[in-house]
Each structure stands twice: as C-alpha cells, then as structure tokens.
Length: 125
Image 1: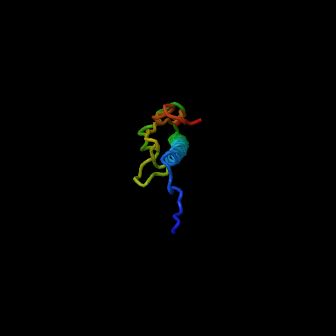
Image 2: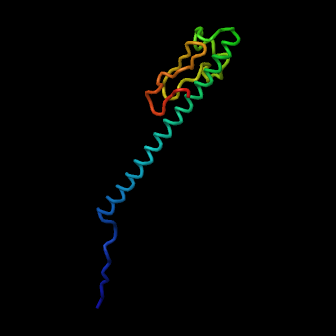
Image 3: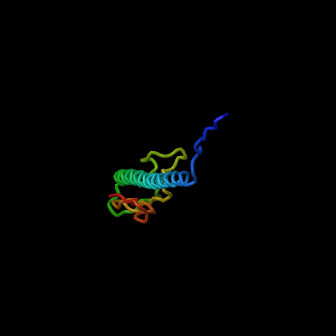
C-alpha cells in the first residue's frame, strides 16, 4: 500500500502579496519626495551661483565703464557676456528651474524671475 504524503500549500496568499506591495509603495513615496526636494535645492543653489557671477560681472563692467551706483546697465546681458563664462550656445546660462535673470542697475543685486515664489528661494542672500 502506498502512502501519500500531504504537502503544505505552496505559494503566497493574497494578503501577503498586498502587504509587500503596500510596503514597496510607501518606501517609493518617501524616496520620490526626497528626490524632488533635493532637485529643487540643487536648482536654487545653481541659480544663486549664477546670480553671484552676474553681480560680479556687473560690478566689473561698471568699474571699467566708470559707472556709478544707480546708473543703468545698458543692454543686459550683452554688456556682461565678456565677463561671464558662457554656455555652449554662447549665452549666459539661464536659471535651471526656468526663470530669467535681470540686472537693471549698477549696485543693485541681480534677480531671478522666480525669486521667492519657489522654495527654496532663488534670491541672493
């Protein structure tokens, strides 16, 4: 007489699979929010770095052209291109978040069009 061995059920239950999927979803949601925050922070730092370079270029331009504080800078950004490192297209690098720069007057800090509307702010300290 042959004896049949009973095998326990193999595989996973639906509840076990749902728990694993829920844990993976929770971990990915936390990771994605961290990546979005890190991206925004790095864009703000790059924008602030560009604003510092534009400010330095404006000061050099004003010094060479004997302009005083408060006098307008003519043809921004064309007048400042000799003083800045240009991108591969031959123009001043733009804000990585899509903003645009303005430097209207000697002695006034340059600004990004995004300014304080985004977090972290794209403003020179």
